[in-house]
Image (cartoon, rainbow, N blue to C red; front, top):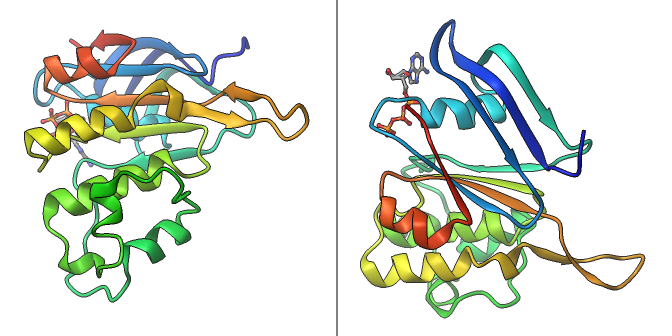
Length: 199
Ligand SMILES: Nc1ncnc2c1ncn2[C@@H]1O[C@H](COP(=O)(O)OP(=O)(O)OP(=O)(O)O)[C@@H](O)[C@H]1O
């Protein structure tokens, strides 16, 4: 396998029966790749298959050895009562609080069960981006976001966030990637280096 983080080769995925595919795509280090398609065409199912939560019915999914995946699902899990602050959630996720956007910093001291849908959404996306994962899967991350927060999300997805300091050389290397599902074509074009359409 090449230096790709992920290679999806002629994949057909589903839940017992096929719902998506065949699809092929690669994600190289430093790339933000978009997945676009109509409601129900199987975008989330493809992410699920990559995260080993849906059945791989044909084709191959090759992951770089040791690849760590963070998966922000379309509807982030929320419990009615969760006496945990945003900072505690970020610590638990191993996410850095360095360079945290002010809008997230402002709510990070609050209990997560008392955040609005958009505040919680951004916090979870930050947890994924600022965590240790090599590949970040984001399913409809613009859900619940107003235009200002959507612009902030765009900044959070800047490829500069995908760099990491290499311990041996002390160089900054771009060795992480994002696969992003959205039904908002404009957002995908702004956020992604490449958009793959699913039929
Ligand atoms: N857990 C499941 N078990 C069985 N079928 C499922 C399951 N989840 C989704 N499906 C079916 O798989 C198909 C594709 O759903 P999926 O959520 O992957 O589409 P999508 O492109 O992400 O849709 P949307 O844009 O509406 O979020 C749909 O017909 C859906 O009903």
